[in-house]
Image 1: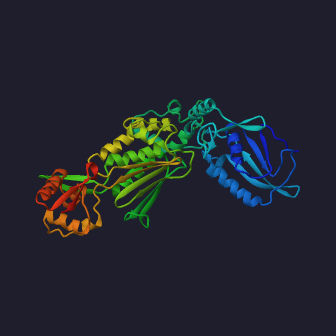
Image 2: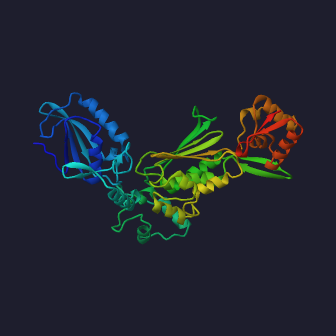
Image 3: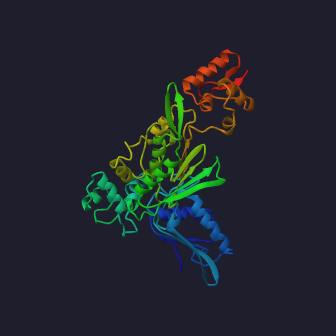
Length: 432
């Protein structure tokens, strides 16, 4: 006889309300949901259990935040010659879970209370968030306890950091019982996460030039990935006055910091890889997990930061990989201060993406101009093919400094060759 209680929920058929019950069990205690059984415990069965099972899988994956796939098990069972669906929900660690369409508020967060699912109060939600933060991924025990730290020890010795059991405990690599935490897993040679890099020909993902995947300790991944990207970060010389200036395609700090930011702040509850794509004119790095709840992009630009993995951030800080906490994005923007194309930062619920632009990139129209023309003639030739030009393009076209580019453009305006349109960062020059 089936009966609803603290750990059992009965449903005659599949409806969207099933997500509420899944959320309640995940936030409260292990539970089982039977679909195809009425409130009196009578087995009704489902007309198309296979179709319902597929729909249910989509509801759980797309309708609930955060991902509960690892904490739910759904399957069809035939009882009394009738198909029913059984949903096994485990109490999950990263509470509160909530309905995606409602958000992180009372109408979206549910708890199991007796034999019903009820909305959580704002006070309870805040308490769950605090408890979840103190019981974050990096503090939980690693499932794999057979870990080795060859690379970590090598790095520690290089930085004169003592290696012993007490040090591992103080850094939260092991807990008070001597068991390895997930932080230990990330730093170990057996780290299951990776960084995937792809180098493309041109400015789209049509043709690969090269690709590599970096594994091992996250410290090793950072070093190996940066060395790999540095090979493709070309240097271009530019004559400014009597001096030659060497300029990398991507400011080294921006490249390095965007990589460190992706590794330190990603959400390791997701098992996918950090993805890096390098094109002729730009670079993209995408990590799983958006900003920590309560932090917005506006906060980030203002220098406000909250680390999802503070213990991992502390390790990188001790090893002097990062200079200080919470300054990374600001420093990335600063490194592009003299360039017109600024880095782009995009955030969603489950991903964080940084795009850096190649400061030496010259488009095809500029590359094909004859080299025997005067500087003014090169600008005119470019404008005969294009409607307008900006100072940054002039710098690249003529390989001159910002000051020299402005002087040439102003003279062409005085000579009634060009007109100036726009204002601020959107200033362009056109043939008169």
